[in-house]
Length: 258
Length: 310
Image (cartoon, chains in turn red, blue):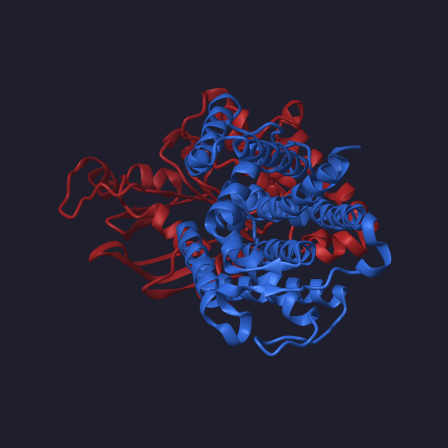
């Protein structure tokens, strides 16, 4: 479903992503792991259009997307979340969700003046959809709370909720379990699996190996910006190279996060 | 006394138009426009040049109706905002600040020096007051009604937009533009729309000002009264709240013009110092509000979307 071919990205001479190719199968949960500085988040940014590739290609649903601006990639059905949850703090939880659906009638200001009735009718539909997502994530009780007042865990769920509002084919999750308690982690894992059963594809960066072992169908390991190996969670866990990558300090190791 | 009150409220209303425009740009979209005076001047001069009877000293004398002048003021201000926005709005927000303050000063210098266009420092006088001959003594009262009608239209235009998904995207951009992009929104397009609409509103305010005073000169568009005071009004009243913006205009102008009356009683030897003192007073007021109510007198309404109100 998603193919990255020979991606390269340099920052001031440092190769964060080095000829990295990955292939993410449809309707599966794929894990992307690797030591800090392996280039995982950079790869995410390259896929989602936050950064542009130096060389290489990104294909999504048989369509090349690496030259599209970031907001257009979302419209192709590929949504990403952030490692540190980024709520729109001075907006309510429900509005954080209602923002997302594409091509809303009321996003053109003249429609708000001249077609206010239709805009309002559409708003009611979007609101109902947002309420559904809030129910799914068990956030209904904080619906009208400003998102800035939510806990870190709730913001993580909200981040996932925004992804659901765009009803994408595929979701890129950047450390969905980081900084959340074990109960919430279980809930997030359950939600991811439920969504996969509904036909969604996931690619997730995660450091929590229990979560990876638990939900992933396939795991890709990155190290030093390169694709190291891939396989089932079991295969990867028992691989010697992976252990070395995590434990051994290799040359070129750098502090750039993710 | 009544006539002074009417005069006072007209000026408040004109400042209110400016703060509504700035609130759209800064309060809702986070666009740091510190060139309000530039759009004010463009609106004022555009309408003045188009509606005046012909004179030999400068361009103009098209004798067009008042309403054409107002609309043209909006269009020309909007075009200038578009030209500023194209190169700057893709960059970080500080670039817009630098560009707007620079262009406001450039506009003021053009107005001052291009005599063929604006009559330079001598300014443009005899700007027509619509229906003046019909109304005579009650003129200012009529003009106040006109200002209120214009304010109401602008208020409606902004509120409808802000309460709809368009406004939600603007507020999302203000909070975190990367999240807005990730949500599939074309951040640049929305920023440009907000900057242009805000500037058009300021242009209308400028035209309303020109037809009221009937005389404009470069002196009227200095950063102090044209930009700084508008910002103070918005911050005191409540950024991100259109009613707050209007309240801020009323309160700040009350203090500004009230202290002017007080200082006029002082002996002439110290009136210049007193004028500087008024600026300090406004600065102190701003500090007090920022320390005690950082969100302004009326903060932002978290449930601004129209469907969330029902």
